Structures are given as structure tokens and as C-alpha cells.
Length: 105
Image 1: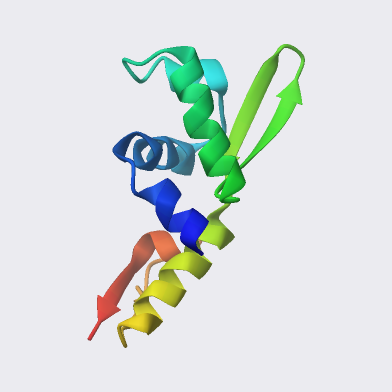
Image 2 (image 1 turned 180 degrees about the vertical axis):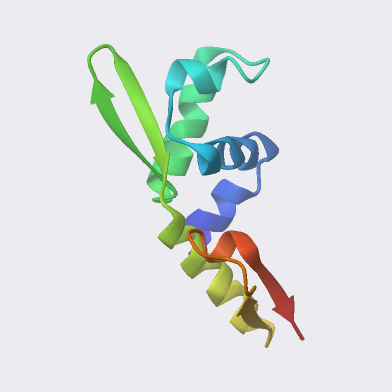
């Protein structure tokens, strides 16, 4: 769990997750969205992979990353339970349950 929150503590890594919510993307596509070096992005990808928030697949010369939503859901669920919050799914949420969740206190 700590690995997940460490990964989420950085704004660049949170933005990577936001981008991957839309669709899987190659390392190059993701790196183009940031004004940092490719080695720096590679380090961010490593932290996200280590936390199991993303998975990677080598396709030819490219590495494609995909969001592991279930790990993020579990982390948010545990976090909310630690504070006694209950997660409630919105009525119109169909494909991405946690993307459309609100907290109820």
C-alpha cells in the first residue's frame, strides 16, 4: 500500500495515470506530454510499475503502458476505509466504477 501512495505523491506520476485512464500509451507518447528528460520519465514509469499501478508490454521497439485500475481502486478503498468513509458508485457509472465514485461521510 505504501508503494501506491509513494507513487501517487508525485504530480508527474499522477498526470501519467490520468493520461493512461484514457487509453494505453507508449513511453514516447507519454514522455512527449512532459518537459522532462526521457531518463526522468523512465524513473517515473519504474515507480508506477513497482507500485503495480501500470503494466508495460514491449511491442516492437516501443514499450506500451496501461493503467491497472484495480490496484488504484483497492488503494483508494483502503484509504477511504481508514477514515471511515464509504464509497458510493454513481448511477451512470458503467465501465470505470472508481472513476465515477464520490465519497460519502
